[in-house]
Length: 147
Image 1 (cartoon, one colour):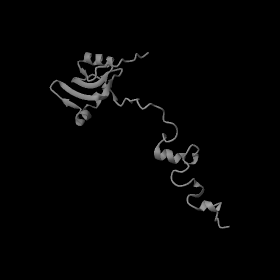
Image 2: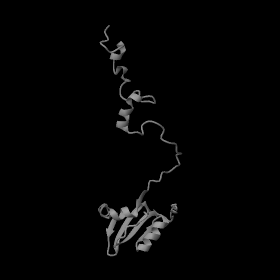
Image 3: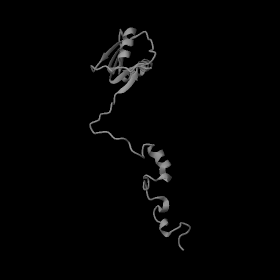
Image 4: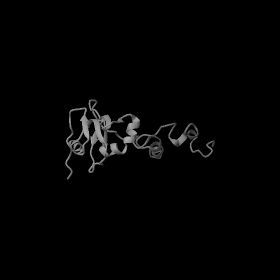
C-alpha cells in the first residue's frame, strides 16, 4: 500500500521511527541511544551533577608530593618553575599544596621550595633533611594521623 516495508506511511518521512533528528529522544528513557551518547559525550551526560551554592568555591590548587617534585625536577626547570643555584635548586610552586609520602626521597642537592601551603609533617621532615620550605600563605594544614 505504498509503504515499501517501512511500516506506517509516516515512518518514511525524516528520521521515521528512529527517534527524530539529531539528539532527539536522548532523555531519561533513551536506552537505545545511550551507548552513542556515552561514546560521544562521556558518562556524565545523564543524571544529576550535584548541588552547590553559588558562594561555594572549589579548591583549584594542585596537590603535589615531594617525591614527584624530585622525580620531575627536569621538567620543572623547562617550565621555568625551578632554577639551579649555587646552593641547590629554587622551586617556585605558588599555586600548589605540598603533601608528603611515607618515605621521602633523599637527594644531595638542597631544595628551597616556595609553595602556597604544606602539611606540618612534610615541613618537619624536609627541615630534617636540610631543605627549606617557604609558605606564601600563613596557614599550615594539619596532617591527619594514619591509623
